[in-house]
Image 1 (cartoon, rainbow, N blue to C red):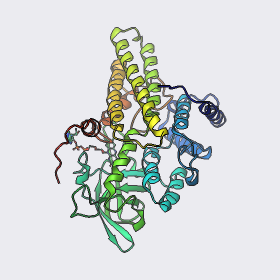
Image 2 (tube, rainbow, N blue to C red; image 1 turned 60 degrees about the horizontal axis):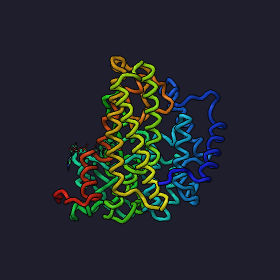
Image 3 (cartoon, helix red, strand yellow; image 1 turned 90 degrees about the horizontal axis):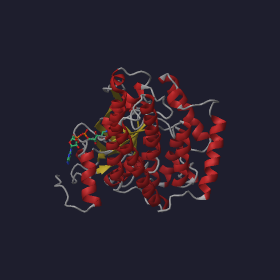
Image 4 (spheres, rainbow, N blue to C red; image 1 turned 180 degrees about the vertical axis):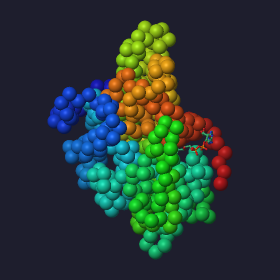
Amino acid sequence: MDISYPPEAKSFRAHVRRVLAEELPPNWTGIGSIPGRREALDFWESWRATLHRRGLLGLTWPKEYGGQGLSQLHQVVLVEELMRAGVPSGGLNDMVSIKMIGNILLLWGTEEQKRHFVPRILSNEHIWCQGFSEPEAGSDLASLRTRARLDGDEWVIDGQKIWTTMAHRANWIFVLARTDPDAPKHRGISFPLVPIDQPGVEVRQIKMMNGDDDFCEVFFDGARTPADHVVGPVNGGWKVAKSLLGFERGEEAATLPIAFRAELDRLIALARERGLADDPVIRQRLAACYCRVESMRHLGYRVLTGYLKGEPPGPESSVLKLYWSEYHQDVTTLAMDILGDAGLVPRGRGPLRSMRTDDPGAPIDSTGSWTTTYLNARAGTIYAGASEIQRNIIAETVLGLPREPVTG
Ligand SMILES: Cc1cc2nc3c(=O)[nH]c(=O)nc-3n(C[C@H](O)[C@H](O)[C@H](O)COP(=O)(O)OP(=O)(O)OC[C@H]3O[C@@H](n4cnc5c(N)ncnc54)[C@H](O)[C@@H]3O)c2cc1C
């Protein structure tokens, strides 16, 4: 496998470095070094606008919908450079807005849907959240009960979603709703796009154990959306949902290891600072983490090769999801062991987003950052499908082993 970058990557890297030099303040050391949460969130919001203004969002999306028409390789180079500079590669909700629904609209949307929604995603006029899970439908998502019925030229939606990340910051939600209650459970589901700012939608935040309240419940009581705001065929939403989960689990295959590597480098620096770099067990564990990040990087390159041929993420994205989420629990547990007692009295702010790694450029001795990341990592093996579910998918779809018995 040749993993050297082609010449166009070099010129694009130089372009990104020029933009960063022009846009970041002098002596900038990373968003993680901004001490106050409010101040850091403000920077993040304005940085997202900068990325948009400088054409660094939606890099791989077609130009006719506001993207740049570049390749996934350019996206990898971009993330490498942004991580090196300690700045995020998108906004707070872009894990949903860009990574999930934007990519899904490009794959499944009608021409009108693409022209209407995609530029508004890039400009942040539309901020999205994901309305899949319900109180009785998580792993067994197809058991969902939220209903949508056609009333003239509008869908009317009733039901409840839960664990809807960042719904309080969103103004649109994509919903999985039952549109044919008589069909077998995977067949009567559709994928409507619903505006949140209307009387029929109520968002309630949920307080988490780490103090964050980014989780929400979303209640629909006669909520309305136009009939042509369904993505994919009516009653054919399950296929759209499955391809969205592919993006959710695998789209960052080639870029996520870059963030994990930066985080591991900070952990190695922390071990040195604490005088533990020559501890034989800590050294072994750090080396094991390094091997796992490198394995992820090479798995990422393999997935990237598929992207470059135009293949969307498939079931092998479950391999990545399983691998990174279990790795991240181990590496953050190691961080807590390195911190020892200091981990019990967190100092400094936690990361701005309660998922994945700490903030790029976070000070290595910010116990608040490591402790929050450790707590957040517990959720990594649950969201986007729990580890047991990923193993089921790998067993059945990748390895062709017998299927689990399915009910309904
Ligand atoms: C941080 C976080 C963010 C999230 N954000 C969103 C969001 O924005 N939008 C959204 O829609 N949802 C979101 N979720 C919800 C998430 O998708 C669900 O929590 C997840 O799918 C698991 O569903 P559940 O919580 O109902 O657990 P359950 O499905 O009840 O599972 C409980 C346990 O049983 C195991 N289990 C279940 N079925 C099987 C099986 N067939 N074989 C073996 N083991 C099984 C599971 O692995 C798990 O350990 C989020 C969750 C978290 C933690």
